[in-house]
Image (cartoon, rainbow, N blue to C red; front, top):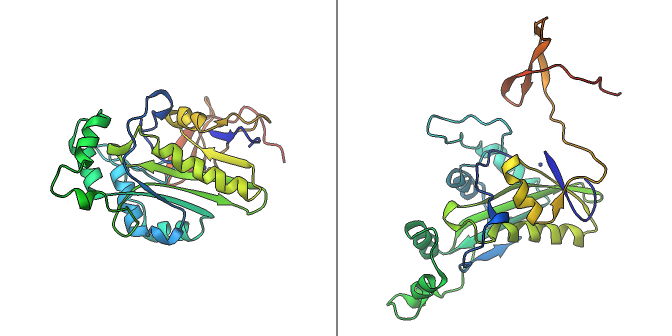
Length: 251
């Protein structure tokens, strides 16, 4: 399903229930560094982030018995990065990531204040400004555009330990700001059902023109059963059993 910004009418991946930001109260946001420089993130670090987030760029990913999606192909990821119009990456310190990974998910602001307070012996290392060179990649998002009329937002992800802090929304807002500054207002996001509340909180909604997203599926077989007229279609790398179209396509 495609959603569009409230700016003007008008894609996703396998993302379980990680986008519950819209209905949850954000926790205290730790120190982060947000970069819009594509050179600050390389394909290897991004591939690792995909794995940590259990995120797949495929609409129909292969999922193992443990619920993990297959790793993204590194060469295709490099190509995607190179052809992305805008890349937003978020970095945080390894101390922050370790703190939230090992602590209670509902860690309070006072607990974090004690963590970064000056009472500890390594406080100086903790207050050193975070940069892409000394920080860990904890969030990412990108936009693809024709540089004139339309754009689409893809691959919004944040590591599990730092979710529900508003970081994902910061990524989307940065992408939207940079796109609108270029005069592009027809911005879409291809999202799953679970992601709809997140994108709605970021200002997206249904297309005022009533359009919807259609996925290409190359037919590989004729009808399996003349009685129900179902067909096998190929979507990505998967074969799906699809019902017949209720309406003919208009050419």
